[in-house]
Image (cartoon, rainbow, N blue to C red):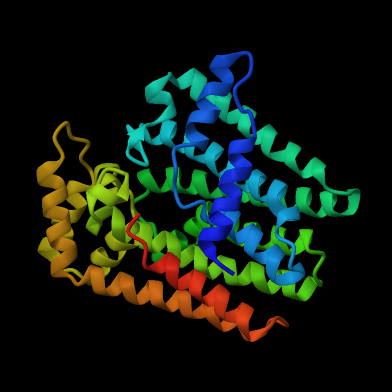
Length: 323
């Protein structure tokens, strides 16, 4: 089982689809966002799970594409809501076209995602659509909580973890479970691989928070310090408020009330406070904690030791990323 092999198989399948048709202004942005790159983590998970449970990952390609199209739909709309200029180092859809195009193309992507489940027989289709609907709604719940947190002064770390579970982790978990559904595996293993994905997704998002502040701009593909500019109450911020001295705490609160034209001083100062209070170490501990939880789930699954190792290696590959 080779992650790069799944990645390539998925990309070949993606390239085989003709996205652009009339009206071009609706479909060109879809083609653009789907070809912007990224690791294709979610579709890889769908293919990997199908392979583990049935040794036939190719039948999971339509489900994998549905997951990727849906994920990219959320990115198009998230970027509009965040007024983000860059996505994977390139102009976001609403910057390249306009906001109306971004909204409508995103809507079309959500519908296209559902259409890929039509490749499966009714019983599989029903299971996939049911999980997908639940997941899509949870992602919306998570996005709304994220927006709500911007104006709330009393967000707790537990609330933040719940928000990223909904906004990010449930889709990682669903991607795996969809592969299990296509492979027609038993319910217990399908639920266990979902739990594996849920914890891995939390580790992944916390690492994203870390990279947003401490990553390398050349490889991260997004603006470094974007969360600080947006006053996002990430784990780094909430934990720093918990452990910092009064002076640092007041500085953080002050900076997170500002919306500035030039954010260089704000980013530098907030990053310095994070570093002084050991945030890189504390968040890495948390990431490790969720990664371990994910790995512990594997022992309960009725799959070969080799496949357990493969899933573990995927988790380690994910946690060593710089993008």
